[in-house]
Every structure is written in C-alpha cells, then in structure tokens.
Length: 92
Image 1 (tube, rainbow, N blue to C red):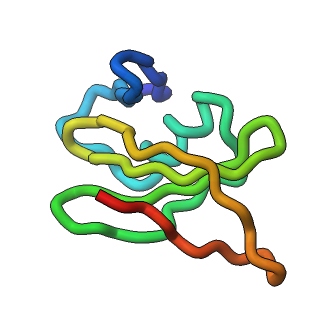
Image 2: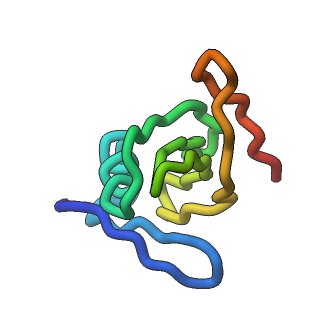
C-alpha cells in the first residue's frame, strides 16, 4: 500500500499502488498526489472504471481511471455550471 504517484507517459497517467485494484480512496489519493484538489469520483462506468473530477492550478479537470490497470486517461478541462455542478463530457 502507501501513497499513490502518477507516472506520466504516452499522454496517459498510471497510478502506482501495491494492490491489484484500487479502492475509491486510493484513486482519490493518487489524483491528489498528482497535484489536484477537491477530488471527487462522480461516476462509475463499470468494468472497474470511474470518472474523477479535480481542480489543479485553479482549473477543473475530469479524467477516467481504470481502478485495476491504474491507467488514468481522457483527461480534459471542464467548466462548472452556474450552480457549481458539472456536466460530465467524457467521450470514448
């Protein structure tokens, strides 16, 4: 176990942990360790994949995390709605 780190390569990010599949808490910790704050898992996509949002350098981003392969991809900037909520725009 232990803290998560991000490895950057090929435009994707890989979370490193000791377990086969990450828990939601480990996903949040790994994204936070990469410099994001206000990290939330906002959608379960099935097949051990989740959509995560987080804020970095004053800007909001969403990303897809595979909890078993630890790959973080589909990272892009998002903009909050007027009421502070988000519209999930992740496409495959």
